[in-house]
Image (cartoon, rainbow, N blue to C red; front, side, top):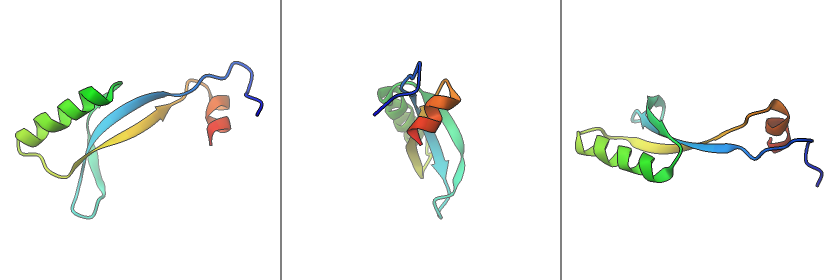
Length: 71
């Protein structure tokens, strides 16, 4: 496997999102660079009465070439 020149693996972000009863996204309530922080946010929001929450892992590329390679 030949990596593109200057290739960097994507960073990961963890977004806490709310969905409706059909699973459609209603929006992002917070995003973090650690799963631990996202889980803490999700727990806090659930204790405040939010429901239908999940954590979405989002890879973030710094270059289009890296994204193309990872597709």
